[in-house]
Image (cartoon, rainbow, N blue to C red):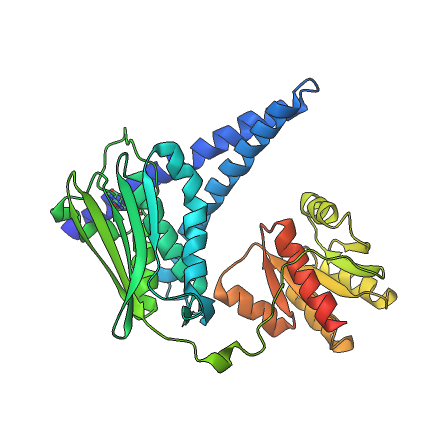
Length: 378
Ligand code: ADP
């Protein structure tokens, strides 16, 4: 009974927080985008407001991603996808991402790398590892006002041990386990000073355990915290590097005109793709339904690549891809979808898609994938 009440309390607090976390960036997006209609808006202001809109949209996206991740973890749908990764480069990425924000706050951020460059290749799930470290460093910065944050890793026998140490507000001992529960936050009042959904640590714990590891902490109120994440250390043997693709995401120019079939029912999404590709030697054909995509494919044998939206009226992208595949075994078909779980990915691949582009994507993501298929395939 008490457990059920506690769970209800957590859910109410969660809805309250999540509503606040969504409304804050939403407010900035709606407010600042309204200024763009003003023809007298100066260039500087336009730039500044557009940065705010982009930053707030990314903030919204990360909340949505957190909610989806936690739902997917709880449904037992999250799977590990291991690849060869360069550990030092991954941590440097996190460092670069936070460096600017930290210097504005007057705290030192230090990264310590244990393995030498060239010896830091491991096999792991890059996305999940990156998310864990990003969550922990993000929290360390959020809950620290003076001092320093040190993060890095060491190798202990068969385990890689990551650590993130801060000199922030600390966590009371009686909360050391609870903070890993979903929605749980030390600060419970409605006048909360720190934002956040209370999901980051439970996602990190779920991912660390899926990867065969664990997460723990040492912390004292007022003195700071150290979070530790251990995962199995799987070193890459040199031959695993053969066949590595370099320059995958480099910008490119096309000598001959290429024809792309873009199946996309939403006008704004289509306009964005058109804009991303506008400087390139690419001819775009547009379909708004799966049936239109099949018709256009049949009447235009010159098509070099298909960008296939999944959720479309009349016939969805999975069905349209299956049909097109019957006639074109080698035509690159890339699913573009806002669904991002492993299941969606498998469904797209099983329907005959070669790869998947998760919305929202930026110009680099789109060009990267087109480049990969148009350069290597044709
Ligand atoms: P969020 O940061 O979105 O609230 P998390 O799950 O990442 O959610 O963290 C849960 C809670 O744990 C935080 O609200 C905070 O109370 C506490 N916490 C996490 N990291 C730290 C830290 N480095 N220092 C102090 N408190 C922390």
